[in-house]
Length: 131
Image 1 (cartoon, rainbow, N blue to C red):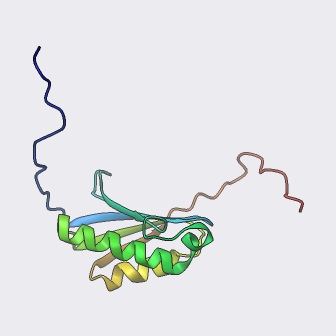
Image 2 (cartoon, rainbow, N blue to C red):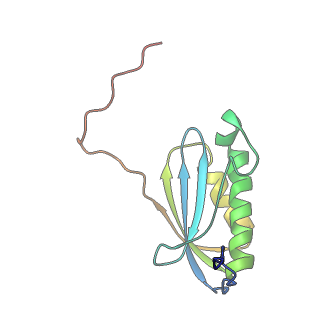
C-alpha cells in the first residue's frame, strides 16, 4: 500500500506589492484591518481580538491602533507595501486611530474613502430596544 504525501512542501514565493488597499471595518465590538492588493487578494490582516484584547476592550481605539500597526508592519516587511489607499467602513471607536497608526508606521496614504453603507429607504429597521 502506497503512502500519500500530506501537506504542502512547496515554499510560497514572496510577492512584491507596492500599492495596497487597506480596508478598516470598525464595529461597536471590534476593529478589523485588512491589507489587499488592487485585485482584492488579501495580503495580511489584524483585529483588536488578535492583538490580545478580549471583550469590550477589543472595540477601544488603543486596540485598533495596535492592530493597525501590526498589519502595517507585516505588509511592509512581507510584501514591500509603500503606498496605501484606505477604505473605512462602520462607525466604531477606532476609525481615526487606525489611520494615524498606519501613517505613523511609515506608509504613504494616497486616498481615504468612507464606504459606510447608508440605507436610503431600504429594509425596515429592527424594533427599538426597550430595557
